[in-house]
Length: 244
Image (cartoon, rainbow, N blue to C red; front, side, top):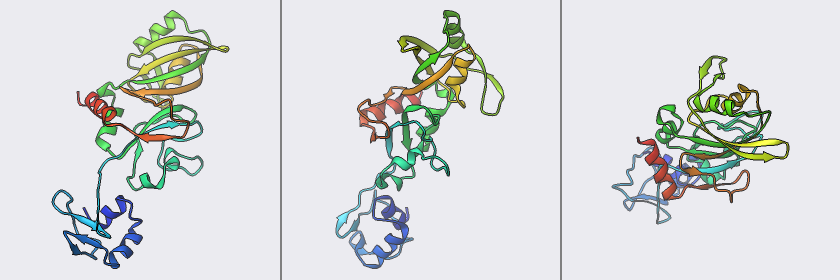
């Protein structure tokens, strides 16, 4: 890895700020002052210090966020704030991105990471990683409708092409004011999929929140817009699920 990239990714400033740091002769590689920003370094074999303090580098970051409504699961947007806009500067240098989409008006669990391999495996329908939601719906959800949803229903995707959804799991929780609360688990993430699935059986989703991605459950102590790093146990379980 280039020295300037390493220092930028470990919180020593922008590339421009890092170049100034290098010119001040406070950066050393194996005890030798280095001023060349392009120099390659390998922390598994070399020691990099700044002001004689050793630089510690971690390649991947994994964040759990409780996404609020009116916030996009995207890295940037001209009109709306994104989940990236909610992060502290310390995490921006890792170039994290959301692993899968969550609709703008949907709340709940979003995983942010720069581990592209894990993100792809979470998103891939082939891995059958369940995403669990709670939906508040209007309309009559009959036993027949539930069976249809559990077997698979025909809906349109974001390109208006029809497809049959993979089998879902449903659990009717009970009434919430004039609505019905339902837990639903799916292994896909098509455009507005949960809403379209319920619409196909004559119901409308009024409120939607994602509670879990596989074994990773939303930390309910996180207020909307808050986030934290995954614990080692949470990450290990998630990785185990996606390696099948």
